[in-house]
Amino acid sequence: MGDKHLGTRASRLEELLIKTSRTFALSIPLLPEPTRREVTVAYLLFRIADTLEDATGWAPAQQAGELHRLAALLKRPTPQGSRDLAQRWLEDPPLPSAPYLELLAELPAVVEALQELSAESREQVRAQTLRTVERMTSFVQRTRDNRTLQLQSVSELQDYCYAVAGIVGEMLTELFLIGTPQLESIAPALRAGAPKFGEALQLVNILKDSAADAGEGREYLPPGIELGTVFELARSDLDTAGCYVRDLQRAGAPRGVVTFTALPVLLAWRTLAVVERHGPGAKLTRDEVANIAGSLHNDLDHGRPAVAPSRPAGCA
Image 1 (cartoon, helix red, strand yellow):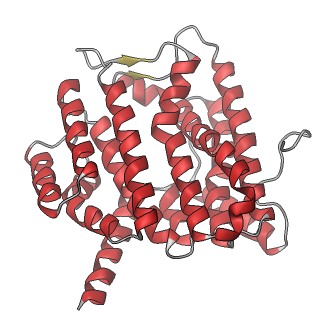
Image 2: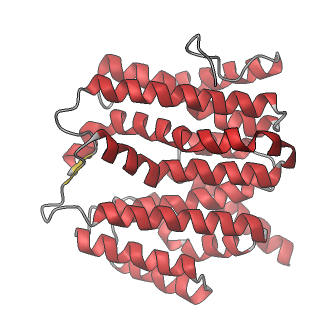
Image 3: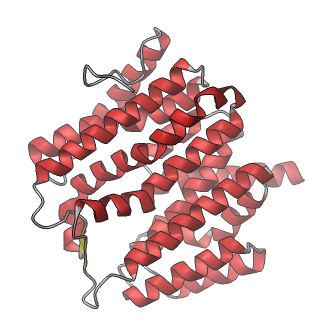
């Protein structure tokens, strides 16, 4: 009975992953167990936090308050607490997106799955999600009464990227190290590159979505900063992310871990080029995504680097 319950919930979490993600729904299933289950739970928790941060139906003060409630639940997860919080959000929905509301309704199942992870992995997911929620809250609290948020400098942009993505890179790194002890020899390099890995992907998303974000009052690109500066920062970060992937590959990480990290980097490189050429809102087609994934698998089959260096200098 217990195994059937676990299997049913795992299938439900996979379904939620598919409904709320595009890239990660492709890459998370490539991971070996138990890392796959850990990253699935972590992704859904971070997506719940993102949904509260992006709540178009709430005033900034309410957003901050609900993020505080999520933080309190993460500090002391209980079945009743998660049920009460999910019910609260459904009675006053933060946004009209059916898939995200479905995810909020399943908060109890996500929290239950979190509690069933190994103690070490559970603490990583819980603590790192909590760090992101608390940093997200600080940005929401800076939103003006007219529901606008304007970052003022490249430093603030990087702080935001760290809050919502750099911490994710750090958490994933720790889960990889827990799941694959032989990676310990490259742990310092992985930990050094992890924040930039996350920052790279977030910067590309910000550049791609800048017009839509601005329409909803979120101005992540600082005024007065040349757009080329942000593109160059994204390229530099993607170089670091490529080194992160090649370090994993050279150290003998499981193929699923290499593919999971390489695919979003390759997609980000191609997306960056498309956005630079065609402007915000441009994105890859499904065929382009499939071709990139196919090329990645072909490179791995033939022992080639998952992410080829983009500059002669290579990795440090």
